[in-house]
Image (cartoon, rainbow, N blue to C red; front, side):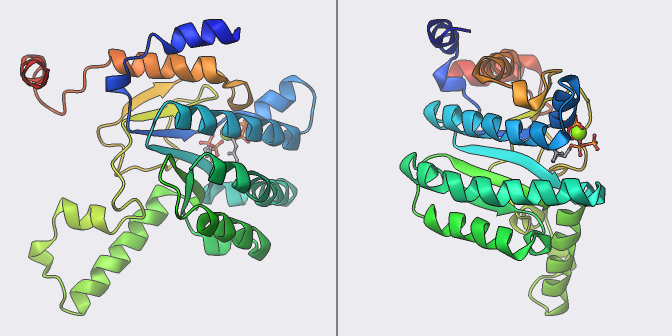
Length: 259
Ligand code: IPE
Ligand code: IPE
Ligand code: MG
């Protein structure tokens, strides 16, 4: 798609109804490589270009939070060589991209059991977090060695510890207590969850936080997910009516009062 056509397509977006938080399950790198009779690692390397592209356009569009599922707890079970390649790629990418992220005012956050990552990858990541800590534009949440059940288990341990110390009564635990002890505390729930690669499943991602997210599944493989495909997802999101359990009439009445 030409630059001009893309600009026209962006013009179709209603800037007042942009999602505040987009979460993406970046899937399909392996299949992208297989289609070209190339190594899976080349699919992952190509996927990095999509990460950079989607981060950049999200920032340009004024999206506040972009959460990327880059490596799941279950991905540790892949062949060791693939895990090593992915770890190397993650460390290398973050080191290479940090100066541009700073320039674009993007702040990095980490979600997941990062202690399990190789030491040098941890260092690159924490350096990236520190270098971008002052940035006030897009918040880029990288999920690494992350799974929602791991996160909910951590949260349960944290809250149980507070109960044990007598700081919280079990009967005072509310949904807000739980939300405040997740790794996404202070971050609004995703408005839109995109999964590339054609599978229609969640694969242990943000189970608590996506309770009311709009889900968008696309067959496009992650390395092929370009700005055009992303704008398609955002346009589709804007056609959805988010009712949060209410009736359509109630939602229209609220929208009319707010306009
Ligand atoms: C997503 O692509 C990247 C990671 C899970 C790290 P895959 O590697 O899962 O690609 P497919 O699903 O095999 O095509
Ligand atoms: C989900 O992709 C995890 C990430 C994108 C990091 P997978 O390829 O691991 O998911 P499954 O195994 O097909 O469910
Ligand atoms: Mg996959």
